[in-house]
Length: 305
Image 1 (spheres, rainbow, N blue to C red):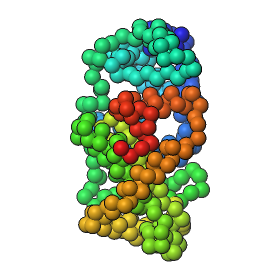
Image 2 (tube, rainbow, N blue to C red):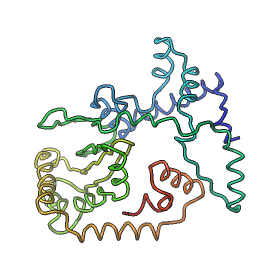
Image 3 (cartoon, rainbow, N blue to C red):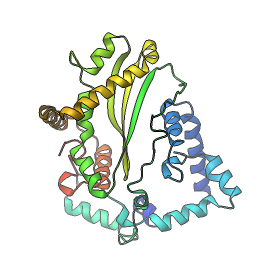
Image 4 (cartoon, rainbow, N blue to C red):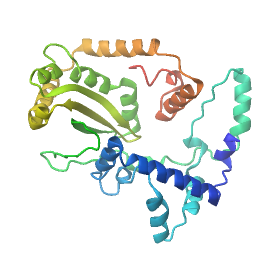
């Protein structure tokens, strides 16, 4: 039955309405979640016409009310989207089971052989390849001040990393340069960035991470958990961080940090707790969709290759 969802879904009117209700409930919940609020605010700075500027989740107002105003039928649009993009060439499948490989292949083919397509449908995101989804607002940069729902103080600096072509994206996901940047900016040694900020009473922690990765770009962010005094010295915090980055640019990244980053990734991979079957399948199929080769399906996301 699961396979028929991809080969011949019903998209009944009642099913569409139930899904709209579920989306509406989720949107209502998200409105009080700071991470969702900040993400949607960030989207308002996307380049004109870029899909990153769209509403991230939707609700009844956007998916039904506004659609009707434009003379569109939500169910008809769903069917149109399915016919246009549900192509086997854009999909990946992972099946986890205790059966033999031969039996798993037989079950997979019987369930999913009906999925149409021969790989001729192009990935729709490729039309945005090489375009910066968040072009600079000004040459001097810009501050965005947000009042959170929760009691929190943070300073976040984000950079979009644009992939001009498929090969550059492959290099990003395999080499994981963000791991080295995270290691260097998040280091907690005596003369590290965070140790200096702590001594001045401006910040408690810093986390640098690859917070988003799409087909055409990634978003690298440095998030500082700051004190009230740290907010008053935000310019100095940013200057301190860029001092470290400029120093790395001048002197290069020490080779030992790359070796340590690669070694720690391998340790985390080797000693990770055992996952349940669902988590395993989701992780593997995500690696397949990200573009790893078969030899890296299992470990590609974890290791620095």
